[in-house]
Image (cartoon, rainbow, N blue to C red; front, top):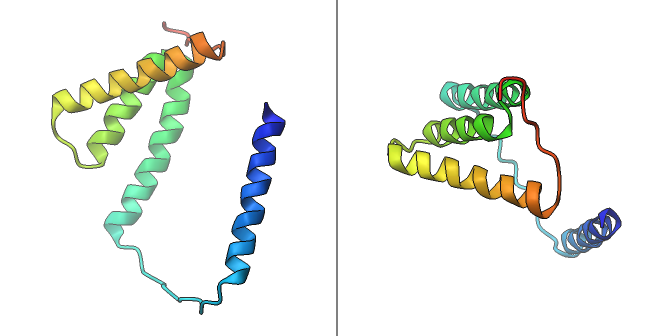
Length: 113
């Protein structure tokens, strides 16, 4: 299976390269400066990912993923608590069932749970 995916990636990369070489467009210089708010958001997102990976070792995949998704949704601007909880839990459960039961991949269980 990895070779099939690698083959598709190579094929799509070659097609993208051919397309970019065949179209003659002038490069656009779009140097847009980052605002302080955007920079803080990027640094916060990277810190959240590091915290998620660390928490997964202690809390396990399910709890760490629910907290990670809820925080990500909250950071993106949504303030509806029911929406945040439902999306976080349902996405985590679907990913867990897909990998644990269908693909038979062992996900981190954590030290605490």
